[in-house]
Amino acid sequence: MRHMKVLEAIRDVAESGSIRRSAERLAITPSALTRKIQDFEQEIGTTVFERLPQGMRLNSAGELLLRHIRDQLADFDRLRSQIADLSGVRRGHVAIACSQAFAHELIPNEIEAYRAQHPLVSFTVLVRDHTFAVEALTSFEADLAVVLQPPPAPELQPLQILAQPLCALMGPGHPLAKRKTVRLRDCLQYSIAMPGAGLAIRHLLQGAIVKASIPMRIAIESDSFEVLRSYAVREEVISFQIRAGIPHDSPDLVAVEIDGRDLPHAQVVLGQLHGRRLSVAASKFVDQIGRTLTSRYASE
Image (cartoon, rainbow, N blue to C red; front, top):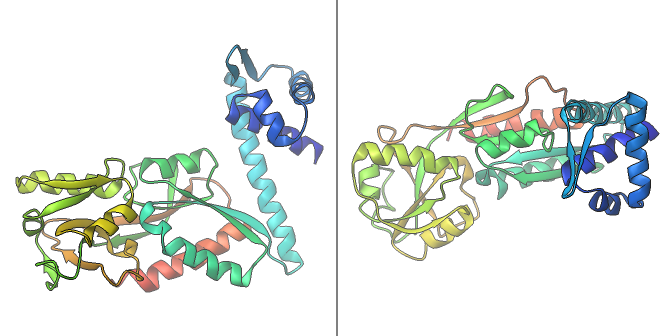
């Protein structure tokens, strides 16, 4: 266990870049933390940090060590989870990176259902869209990702892929609100509440809008779907979201599916870091959320 604490301390310094900040978080003195690192470097026969005026930075050996540390700590968490399962008590921690589309309803609902059965399992939820969700997996910040339209990445191992239609969002009094489906060109006759450039939906829309060759009038642009949904019911504008990302507790919001000839379905990917072994708690959560995605959203 003492060895694990040293590894955790080195990881903390690598991520903070500062002995002082890490010492404060770890509740030890900076000099004690420095000695721990120096003793470890002496044990393995090489330095792992460059000592710079502005702080600490990993050298090449340190980069290799950090990957090893993350693997070791993840394996140790998995072992603790397995040992807890032997006693019939599931413990552990699950870190999830999810696109904004799933942060309002899907992920909180799934965590609530899981913790109702296993209250000793804790969670971290990181709201990360597009490439940032994959980066959270590769940096070991997250065990799992539920992400919309992730970029091609060999590090991402898909566990489940779900196709989701895109919908136009508007208030109930909007002229298009009574339609079953809507063409993109009809949406573009109105001002748009546009998702920000960092969101996957924006990339899907941009290509379709360019293809349609119709001028677009942006009334408001935001990287927050909550802001866009709120504004869609305040003015005669159109916003956009995938079906699975639309809250069921928004009675003033109308969602009309966009014709598939204009916008292809988006991909929702439940995935993990390629080659990483998940803890028991994370594996069981994958099973649960996978069932929900299939039963609730696959048919929509």
